[in-house]
Image 1 (cartoon, rainbow, N blue to C red):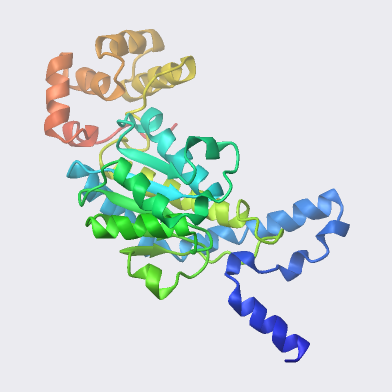
Image 2 (image 1 turned 180 degrees about the vertical axis):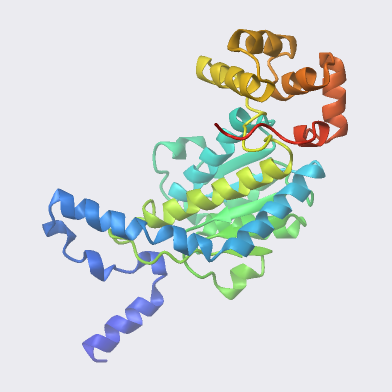
Length: 313
């Protein structure tokens, strides 16, 4: 076989995330500024690739909303960078949106130790993906999102196969087109094709950036749909530190048109809950009445108080 044809055949055998990027072939000769310029140029390709998946991402949001409303959970499943990104997104939901930690969960091949240190061979064991889902008692009420930049990770494939077997809804986030056999286990395929990385196979770069954008969209979109914001205000946050307590006071002061001291007192009366404080002030009711009204409205401040918050200054 001619050398050029041999190279073409070799490339055809590789997933897109494993192919060499011709634009970075001489990156080891580049200056620091040139490396930054090249990385910036490659990273600039990511948002457009993610935008091509708009409809699939929206379907994932709708699925997550339906699952949450029915009392189900969202699971992210991945290995290496993909797994870490899933765990990261899941871990940020409770402080940002006041969710139960069980509502969105991240599973990574190799378990917790893999978050900081690579676990040799963990991603190659397909059976572990199904076993880890079984350990969380995944059922048809849940939504399992596999994350695999190459669309080939055995751990993720095993998890998706197990999820499909128990009737859970499924999605895949990948940066290479998945094979037909994998698609049999997937209800929604989200595949932003970002192209080869500047360092061959280093999917913590463009593929990782695309993945983070997509996971942000899925959980944030679902939480907005569930009434976790009031306008664009993060009214279901958990004030677990001084910064978040200050943010809570600022929101209450802005929405209610009162001073920071009064906002702090109102928050205390509302048990530290921003949404409750806003409803108490707007309707002139006590905490119990405000909580009852919010509960009847599915937690949405907008459905309790018509008109929405004041516009940004």
